[in-house]
Image 1 (tube, rainbow, N blue to C red):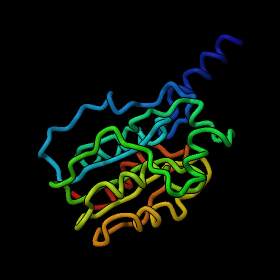
Image 2 (image 1 turned 60 degrees about the vertical axis):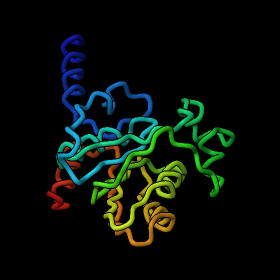
Image 3 (image 1 turned 120 degrees about the vertical axis):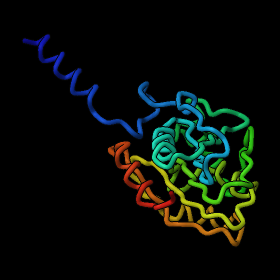
Length: 200
């Protein structure tokens, strides 16, 4: 009976939808597993930052729903598990988030010229977008583009994260309200949101 119970529990867990897993999950999709879409087929680009892979699944789902291209913001110096320990006030991320002037370097920047719409995904750290998003927004030309922010978090809302990023970017870019997905969101939730944007 015990073996049967354990088998049933395992099947239930396998069938549960997963979107924004925490850093300890091994089931998180990696962007490298996502088949790259042919270049030149879309005017939409999904850009995301996901050191813990919590945003990655949402970004992939959005790109899949829209038939868009996708680009991952990778830091020049990758974040380690110790760096991401928000309980440690001396961790790298704690120091960065406590310094409004911090601008972590990005390994490679995308070319945005032919894209009209940018979906910008990120996790919420200390109620805001990670400082590397500030680096991105200040480093690219978003003039004339529509920026659609989306974020993931376990409890915090999107708050002023997108508004603060908008202040750093091109003045004539159009920013929509940020969409937040929590840890209980499914890929179907992302599909529904992406399709509701009517970008096709």
